[in-house]
Image (tube, rainbow, N blue to C red; front, top):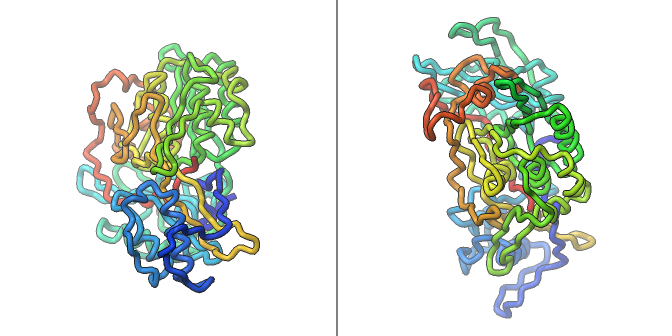
Length: 446
């Protein structure tokens, strides 16, 4: 179960900090419990773990509020580090998806018409239970008509509320019909299931998996899906990661182990590169999978591996973190045919840093960038995102169809031979994306 207070990508390795250890004899001393003492703890922790520790200011202002102090330490290259106060819910990242269970996109069509499209509704979420569906068009939020100029501010205002009134309709023949009002209350969204389908593709069976995220403990579900695919004689695979923010690297490694041929327990999977303290850490598929205590081991997973030479992966600019690792880290072992849009560019990992003294004296948690990640060939550095070979805008043909529908824009591109098109060929329908409500909020786990 999730709400906006529960971080989506909580680290599996929480470093235990018993106290502030500062070996610098000239370091300032502050009264315990003061803002300055908390900031000193933050600085010491960041010096030890932060990827860009060598860029931190030498003489920060310890008098700043804790969050402002933390921000003053961050590199200009850092988009993802954050911190929260476990005793103050207002410090946690908020998003429409986490609070209400849906996301939307504001797009300008070829005729310059601006539409707001619901692109994602989580199963068993407040939005789902209220009757929202992927493909609906939002015409008003809290009674106000959405236009390009106010889309971002209206999204921000939703995150400050606990109830939102939407006017929605269906897209038919270039217009919105059957409008109705729906009220969505803030609440919980349950863990999302893996959606699987088997399509017939030119006499071959193509397996399809929509994977929303990579929580710990998902290897059993993955293993079952691949066992079904293998029993059905699936010869091609489409992975739909278009809205996948990431999560557990171990779960991502488990998925990767089930796809290509030629892997062994000693096959290298990932390289973590940290600062001078963290150094470089290399892990095989088997080693990374084993970091999840609930995981099925590598050899058991390989019994249901499909042994493919290529895989189709559907992406958007919401594809991030461990989902990007799947794309990058399969490339040394097979052909990866990426369809959709360029990914977010979260080529990094980290773990939670917090005070584990008993009693705890500091309630803040730090979620810093600690490592950059690379595949078995040493390829990484995709902070600008991973670009697809085939650029396809899923809004090129409205209405949006359900995920898993063979006629849905990205899925049909994979099924209808999109991989024969030259790199960079676009099927964008002259649609311009003006704003998207989903912004990945947190760091993936190592």
